[in-house]
Each structure stands twice: as C-alpha cells, then as structure tokens.
Image (cartoon, rainbow, N blue to C red):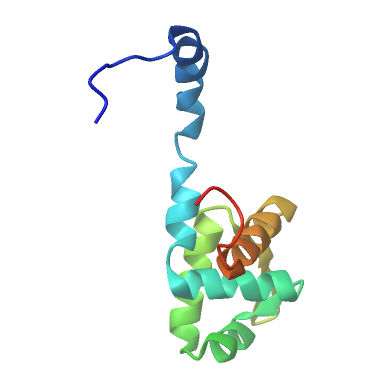
Length: 117
C-alpha cells in the first residue's frame, strides 16, 4: 500500500481540462455494449448496406426487433438509412464507426499474450 499521496501537478493541469471532450462519447460505447447492436454494427462492417429484413435474418430476430436496434443506432448517429420504396436500407454512418467496430473485434479476439499483464 502506498502511504504517500502524490501526483504530477503539471500532468494533471494539462490533462484535466481535456476531460470535457469525453462528454457524450460514452453514449457510443453504451449503444455498442448491447450484443444485438454490436452484431448489427459488425454485420454492417462486412456489407456496405443491409435492409431491415436482412439484418433480422442475420441476427435471428424479428424485423421489429432489428428495426428497433437499427433505429437506436441511427439515433446515436452510428448508422444511417435510405428508403427504396417500402424497403429501408441501413449502413454505418462513416468510416470512424466502421473502424471502431473493426478494432473492437480484433481486440476481442486477442489471446492476451502480449501487453502489460
């Protein structure tokens, strides 16, 4: 146990004001923390766009459930959509979202033999 409380004032003063930039970003991770939404986002990294029916079949759900999760991803600005007649096609909002999901998938598959463990 450390009996001495110390910190680097310069580092704290430089970094602490930047913590406000985190505000709102946690919502991205909250949206992707749901297994169904993460599966949908991952599916959208594998295919440029998918209709609601495709998504429902991919994740093994009803179209209502898929639509609900897609709408949430859209409201969180992680996905976008376009209509073609009665069909609604979804895609990821941009490459940042694609990269975030892709990197998370790679990290999740690591075996833990590297790094500071």
